[in-house]
Length: 173
Image 1: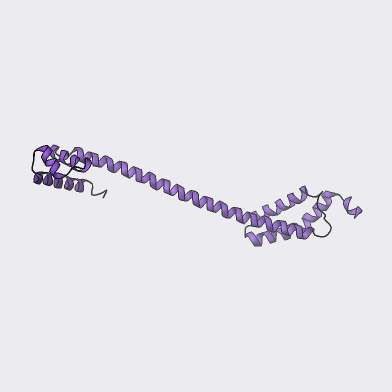
Image 2 (image 1 turned 90 degrees about the vertical axis):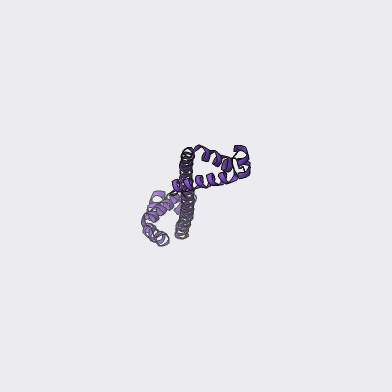
């Protein structure tokens, strides 16, 4: 035991690296199916080993330790990768919704502008009756009484206004 403690840590590490690197890489690759990620994980395992060389008992279970470390890091990578994918998916969903909301606002703004243009181009009496009916929520009888016209005239003018709106806004409806 005394002899093992006095061994050069760099020589021990170098020997372990040469014995286990390729094996651990193949093992990580079978789990991850990604050569570069497997290589990164094995490198991380060996960096971790180097940092802990003073604290580890290297006699018997070093192979098990390296395989277990590689396995755990592979699982952590898979879990983190799934978390990243979920975050990306969630962000894409929020982005899609934001784009849809923006498109809806643009369409609504555009439609409001078109409605305002059609309203401004209605004949004066027709426009006044439409505004009183649709924007002020007044009944035809109330409008007729306020304007001193018959309910039939209000109905006719509203029909005319609605027909103009349908014709001018048919591409938006």
